[in-house]
Structures are given as C-alpha cells and as structure tokens.
Image (cartoon, rainbow, N blue to C red; front, side, top):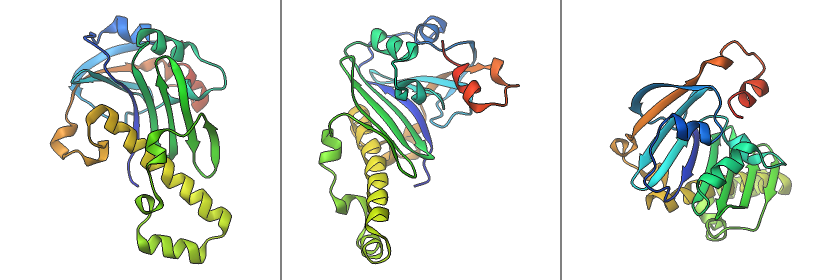
Length: 215
C-alpha cells in the first residue's frame, strides 16, 4: 500500500475551461498560475494541479479533502456542488490512512475517514463496498496470519482499513473504466495546469496552512 493520492475527481464535468476564473469559483484562495505540465496525484502542500481526462476533471491538492470532511458544509464544498450540480464528485486522500467523500447530484452520500481507527463513517454502504468480499481484501496467508495472531478488535480494524483502501480504488473505476492503480505507467501522463499558493510558505502551523488555501 505505497500509494499517495490527493485527488478530487469530477465525472462528466462538461466542456469546462481550466483558468483562473474556475480556480477562484471553486473556492481556492491566492493560487497563481505556475506552468502547464504533467499531472501529479501527490502534490506538495500549497500546490494545485487541474487536468482533464476525456469528459472528466481531476483536481489534485493535498488539503482539498478536508473541505469535504468537516462537520459543517464549507464554502468550498458548496462551490463544487454549485459548479457541478449533476456530476459525481469523489474526493480522495490516500497515504496516511484513507479518506474519501462521494457526492452525487449535489448530495453527500458517503464519507469515510479510516486510519488507526474509524474517524468518520457517514452514509449508507455504496455498491463498491458491498461488492468487496474478504478474499478481495486479503490473500490466504494474510487471512490465516491475522486470524491466528490478531485480536477480534485488531482484525476488525485491519479489515476496515483494507475495505476503505480497496473501495477508494474501486470508486476510481467510475471515472476511468479501470482502477487508478491498474493504469500502465504511460497512462498517468495527463496534461495539467499547475497553480501554487505562495502565501502559506512561511506558515508553520499545518492546520492554518490548510485553511489559508480556501475561501
């Protein structure tokens, strides 16, 4: 599980132009154009990559997920829903745990935050979760070891962690037809527009750095 992905996927975004107006309308604050380059699904803090894939939009920012996981609806989340009211919006943060939010037709239907414990688990199970079986999450040796060596609580935590991780990749099939981790190396090369927020460079507090990037 070596993946780090900080991407929000927008399905059927339409013929939308990637420019300063779009960036600002979505709630990103103090971001300036840097260059046109290759897409990165694991941007550094303060970086923003925006790319098109067929009719879909990919937006990579390491802190955008937290705009979708706060208890109250943020301005940024509202901006995304208002800009793409009939699109599926899937925001994913993968690396130090698994965090994702799924919005359909303007309604948040699923939210999961799973790390060393389950931090948030909101909404009904979605098809991607229901279709995953235990054998999809562990190979035979792993399963044997876990049943022998782990407590019931430890097993359940590992199960939920793997379930969230696999569900996240299964959800990417809605956008690409295959899982994001099934691409060939050459298929990860999307042309992208890169922006950066330089205002946060001298800020030490990570929470403040994250919040300063959004209206």
